[in-house]
View 1: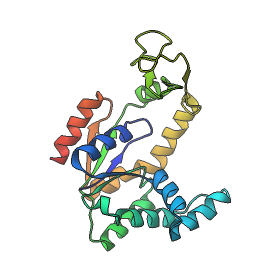
View 2: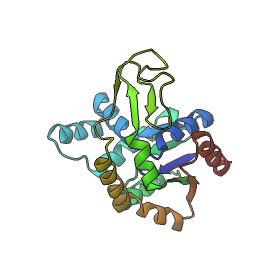
View 3: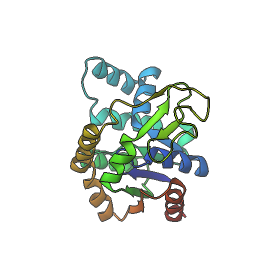
Length: 214
C-alpha cells in the first residue's frame, strides 16, 4: 500500500503517518530524513545533494526523486510506504508518477487532511514543549496538570519553536495554497484523492483514514 498525505503545516500529517505505518507495517518516508540519510550513506545521489546543500543551494526535484527511488527499493518498503512532505508541487507529482510507473508501482490513495485556517493557526502558535524530555503541550488544548511543571519529567523549563508564530504560520499556509494545494485537483482527476476532517480529534482522524484504507 503506497500513500500520500496532503495538508498544510500543522494539519497532523506526521502524527497520522506514524499510526498508519505502525498499523499496516509500511514505512513513513520523510524527504528531509531521506536526504540526510543519503548524504550520510554517501550514495551517488547523496553525494550530489551534499555538494548542493554545502554550497547553500536548493536540492533539485531530480535529486529528491533519485533519493526516493533509492529508498523505495530497500527491503523495508516491500509492503509499501507513506510519503510525508513530497510531492509539494505539480512537477514533483508528475516526476513521482513517472518513477512509480518505471518500478511497476502505483499510488493507492492520496488523503487530504482538511483544516480550518484560523483554527490551525491557533493550534500551531499555542504549541510548546518541555525543554528536558520533549513532551508536547498547548496553551489551550493541553496544559500541564500543574502550571509550569512538565507532567512527564517534572521539569520547569519549556520551549517554543521560533517559527511557531502567527506571521510565519500564515506565510507557510500561503506557500501551501500557492504550491501544494493544486495537487488536490491533480489527484482528484486521477481518482486517487480522498479527504478527512483534519480538525477532528486525533483518534477520530485516524478512524476516518482507516475507513478509506479498508
